[in-house]
Length: 442
Image (cartoon, rainbow, N blue to C red; front, side, top):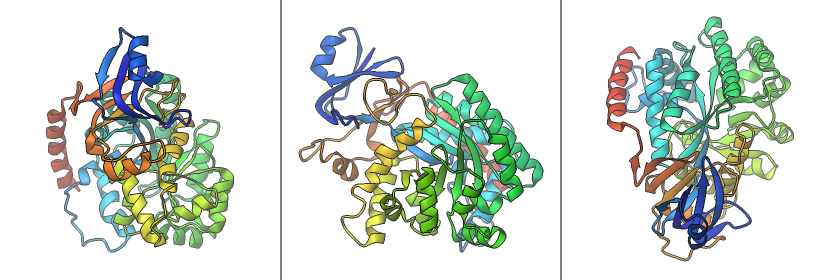
């Protein structure tokens, strides 16, 4: 038994959302009890105790759209002219980078952002991977990294036609092999789903093959959806449908499917997303950085569309994504009261619901029976904190780098900013060596 107490507990449990002198009891990999520190210390006198010293105890953060493989792009110079639009970003950066990744690159480019996740209090990720030069075993390699670091993950490989039929078929097989492996393993930390790149790189023939392969698997699709206008134009010109309409025609939508971005969707597509209960994931920093526009998430939410929050690999810090989403939609709506409710709902309510489709126990809350994913954040409220103003304190007072302790699945993976059982310096040194070699091949 492990007690994490003497802190201000934000539970995300409606029955007791905030305990000013709270404590969380962990048994194995689950939350066993939540209450006052005084009561739980009396109830479990033999338990190990982690003293939060008055700081914030809260559930670990969840990122529902991540790209671990993008790590080695940091600081890399492009060899072509600077991109002038989103398609050129794909062609001149990402589609060149992913081609030259080896399995060793895949492993180390996963380890680094996973370490960063721990340091920023992100305990669960839904990753979307591509390495057309090393498709086979790529998801198993990432799973090895996530297990070693200790971050909870749901993995997929992005099937695409852009590298030819053989690589496309390898992608389908890698998805299905890993989905089957994850199911057989019954592992609380690693799950699988079926990845697709985007409509503009997937023919009808390939989509049909993917649907046939995934039929009966019980998992959904993870796909970039109408991220840029090129995706919409391609779908309309080639298939006479918009992107969401095209996916709907293949019966790919539903509560187990993640449609990432949805920047350029119209009212009819929003209706399809709502009716299918598909999981849209908003990635505000990525959309701004790629200059593709601001996703109409405020309108989607008003229309009943389910929207979660991710980072698209731009950061491992969900506190950061939370802040950016808030100000982005205030800016686009030109209204200072916009996004106060919608963005916290995306992160703190909807992301855990996405997890429910893949993980057996609840995530994103501190309540008995939930997975023991707990973080301690170094924050001392300068004004009163109550159950009604928690989100305001998080928005304006907390950041990922203020996370001191991270516990995932009941295991302490970082304590007082020190990683547990991870040779961080060795990993970073090897990653720099591999990144330098990859830049030469790029």
